[in-house]
Amino acid sequence: MKTLSHLLLICALALFITSCNNDTKSNQTKETDTVEKTDGDKKTGQAFIEDDEGKPNVLQIAIGSKDHSTLVAAVQAAELENALVNAGPLMVFAPTNDAFAALPEGTVENLLKPENKDQLAHILKHHVTPGNYSKDFLKKFKKLGQASNGYVPVEVKGDDVFVGGAKILASVPAGNGIVHVVDKVIIPEE
Image (cartoon, rainbow, N blue to C red):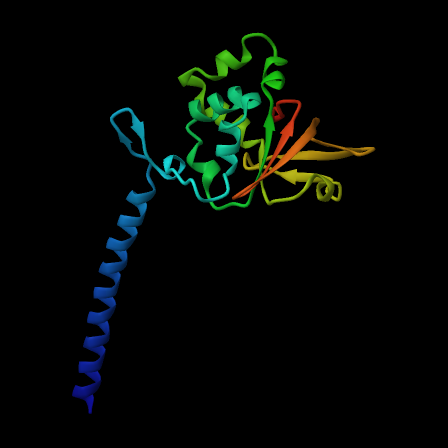
């Protein structure tokens, strides 16, 4: 009986070790599959998969808007494309080109420099919140947690909703959330 118990224990250990080896290989494959790769000048990764059948994601909506070319350039400079196409849901408060133009002269140009990529990414993440809430539903909130690990206040003035001081001008549903077009760049306090 002891021999049978030892044999079963040895078999269980062998299965466990084999299972761990397979999980390690599987996890290594998964990690490398999600890393953004470049193929010459062509970027690859989740953000660069073309899908003509699905509902556009928040990044595709911004790319397709003539009023958000500065935002798209900033997202590309900060290399955040893949973050904006994940399953979400995501709420993106998307400043218009005019909102970026209202910043002090030289601010946008300075942020787009490669050496300021981390600062730019932090500012852009301050415009993203998990969830998929309409403008009217946002009226129930006092503040929102942002992807930058900060918070922004939500204020209601009549029918208008302001997030971090930026007025929501329009809302566009996306396949992975919603894009709220805003009239101001939301700069984190920290």
